[in-house]
Length: 279
Ligand code: HPA
Picture 1 (cartoon, protein in one colour):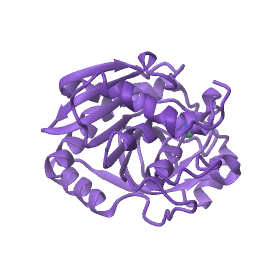
Picture 2 (spheres, rainbow, N blue to C red; picture 1 turned 180 degrees about the vertical axis):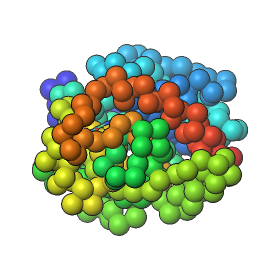
Picture 3 (cartoon, rainbow, N blue to C red; picture 1 turned 45 degrees about the horizontal axis):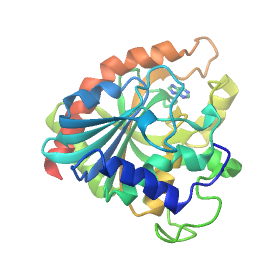
């Protein structure tokens, strides 16, 4: 698609297309990151929509992202699950990357739960850990690729949205409670979003650590920025898939990211299910 900014009419066209394929009215949106798509299999009474059936919908070219919407219920909560997402590094505009969140907002979704696979920068994190995202560093935005650049869509929110509480404190509290109940150790920290697709050099990682980052990934931040612009509440959880390579002695691969997803998915499912039950 050549157009850098999607219009409200285009966003509404996508929302109508989804409405014509399901009678369910989701309240929660859940974005599943690399290797974490298995969570969608637990959705009850699913209406499944392949991304390729939807106009303008960005389709991931990355292995490990299924590419479909699953709309149904999880723990009796009406939910729309994105099994797979696109990334800025795939060569599309920020407006396209974040189209799904805009569509969720037009569908009336109130809460966005966003997950991702991330590399550990914090020295105590190990692969398989979960990290509650309490804040993020928007490096891609700082470099000039904030998804809100362009005409402001007043229908969603104001020109200069506040980001001081991007990750909802009440939802964070529910996630902490859910982790405790399920005996899952939940780390908490700051996620830094980079563009990728190359992994970081050891010097990049030492810099990110000094800047206050605990985990690093290539997604989430644009989606959360758009969610907050439209006043959607956000819960963010990273699945730690690998130790980031601060010393330069280990290699990072996409295969290890997907492999760690198998360890992370059952824990993530327990936390998300508990949070959904307590909403
Ligand atoms: N760096 C960036 N993105 C990632 C990583 C990483 O180490 N692991 C999973 N996504």
